[in-house]
Length: 401
Image (cartoon, rainbow, N blue to C red; front, side, top):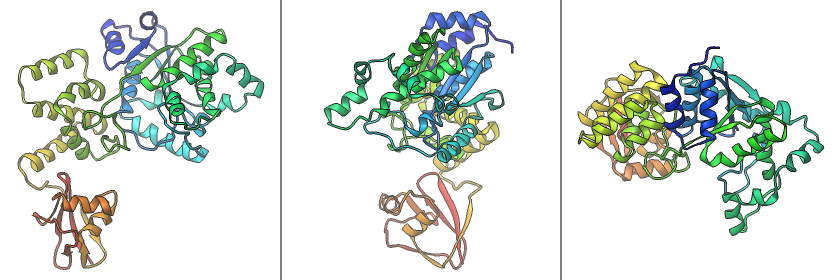
């Protein structure tokens, strides 16, 4: 495997879309050496769907991969049963092996547009964690103090709120650190909330006579509201598996002051491109036009140029020309008459019936281009196909039986 030691590429890798590098000069020296480095990202596949916030470190993995280094995706089929306590206000439920493996496969599918998965080393940490004896665990635990564990912010918060801290949660950073020993990792990536666990890897590698890994953390990407961390619970996320038109539309909804952040963390632009966008924004160019380019770039990353172009055309048609898209999904439901709330729920255009009612009452629903604001309203599906619009982007041509 040939390693690229281009200074510009190394500079972009270490400075763009990065929160912290430990130890930066040491890692820069390794990247210049021409040696193939082992780059580790640990994933506990306790969740199913990824969003753009999760992909920040995946973009960094791509940069390492493009330079010729070995990417290791480590799935925590052992640690994942416990759950990482980082950033959690309560003890996480344990998962089954079947759940973890199913989620891991879906994870690989979702990162494949960014990473060349065929060249990735995929590992599972039960391979070395499961055989450890109790004596081995005691040896690992001796490298840390209780005070070090309790200094962590999330544990301090739980203590203040008189919430329980399970002893097994202290084991998590030990296990993650030992993963780095087992894999002989040169670099480990993670979010800023993972710093303690990443540092545990350095501690244990030293204890086992290995050169300590360098650490690169990615910044937290704010959600579409421009303030809170992107997440499904807050509803401000852009999912990797969402429809291209939804990814495009949600990106267009971000605040203007988030444009450069999204360009840096979600669109994989280089330093020169980012500087050019900043110059255009400062020069008074309409932020909407910049967001169009941003949304196009993000959709293209996951779905290709052709699909990105269609998504952009649909957005212009719906939002700027106020027209119905050329291609609208046709669906058939059983029955001739439907309550509008029940119909929206049946078609999966709202998360629940209560959400469907909110959409109707908020004026976000149209039937045959006429706004429907009465939650008791009924639509007749006996005569012909009717056009249902929910929100700005969701259209369906509906017929009944």
